[in-house]
Length: 191
Image (cartoon, rainbow, N blue to C red; front, side):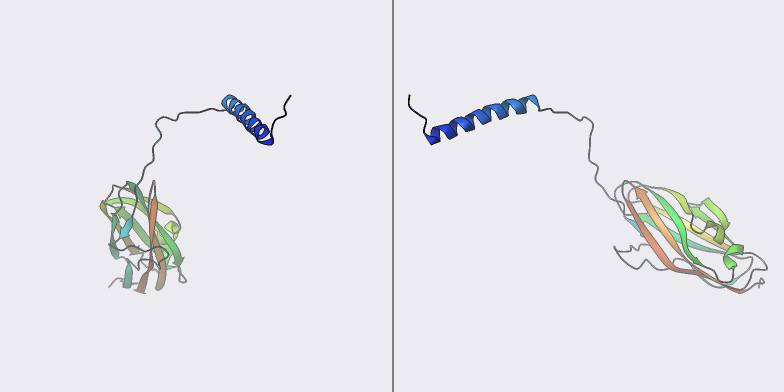
């Protein structure tokens, strides 16, 4: 009997491996179908008073600076929120980084409105650090928020500083930080 050449042996080995591997793969293969899956694309882009803090920016600047405040007078700051994106989101506000050496924030009442509805009320010190839900914003919607401050009678003279963090969340999120806000009480009596 004639012996096989090395080339023939290699061809037989490859053929048997291919046959065996194909059979093994057939026994261990499986597939599943997922129905109803989808990929949603879109964005949320929050702008405050038309300003947008670019990524890694320094904030959008103050939206409320009150000099020479007097007790028993309401001071109002209206802020425009714009969802310049293409998907729905929910707007929030948070008082951050409150600096109050004289204790004035504890006797300063704050009222936060969204589209003329009151969403939060309390003292500045009580609401500091609390995330306050404003409400929904459709794509390309422009809404108004209002921050009203009122210093109680017999308040200590002084100043407090704070930041306002605005956020819009949904399938995506965006936030803007308004830095440099303050209230300066120059007299504790009504003029």
